[in-house]
Amino acid sequence: MTGHIALRHELGLSEEMTASQVKRIRGTPDYSAPATAKQAKALVDIGFQRRGKKKKWIKASRRWIQENLTLGQAGIILKTMGYISTGGKKKWDIPTPQRRFLGEPQEYMQYELDSIIRFIEQEQRKRG
Image 1 (cartoon, helix red, strand yellow):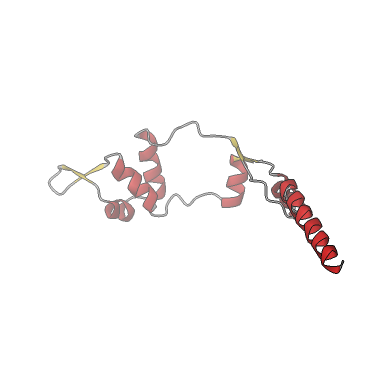
Image 2 (cartoon, helix red, strand yellow):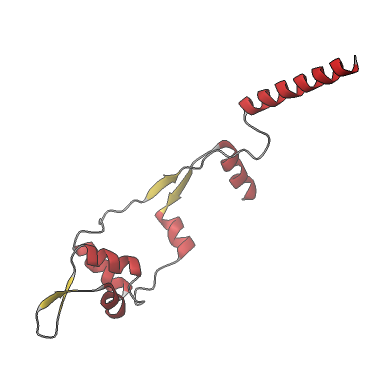
């Protein structure tokens, strides 16, 4: 596994990730847990409202959302209000920038070779 990661970074190869791999890595979410801060922000941004004490509709605050809604409830509300698409990607590519571990890029190698040759020539001139 380490060799594959090193090769991917050395050559700058992309990695394909699937939804099932992410599920295996992160596990299944606890839908009964409190709503997350990101969900609360998204609900406030799209104008989510709740019923107040006098049966009047009022804007829900982030704090109220996190205290009164579960992760699953917030997700369903976001989905029905059109904030989350229903399709979702099944697989995607993760690009990896090329990072050389073994040696340097060709243009730097040529520059270093030229500087080494100049240094040797200067030392030879000094010695006569």
